[in-house]
Length: 82
Image (cartoon, rainbow, N blue to C red; front, side, top):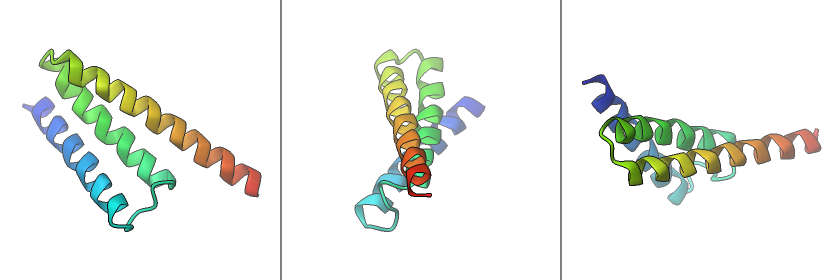
């Protein structure tokens, strides 16, 4: 039951994040944007692997990796600016 909730929360985070970036509510180069993508992807990934839906699980692994690289790039940019 809790894994289903984790998956739904992850999906809502991913969709809300995409909506906010598309409507310029949230900057897609912001740390928060990448963090929400990471947390959402992990939620969906947990659910997908639990249900053995490997294609979705591996997409979420890639999505998480992209989010981590994005977070690192934001960190690096902020560090250079300081």
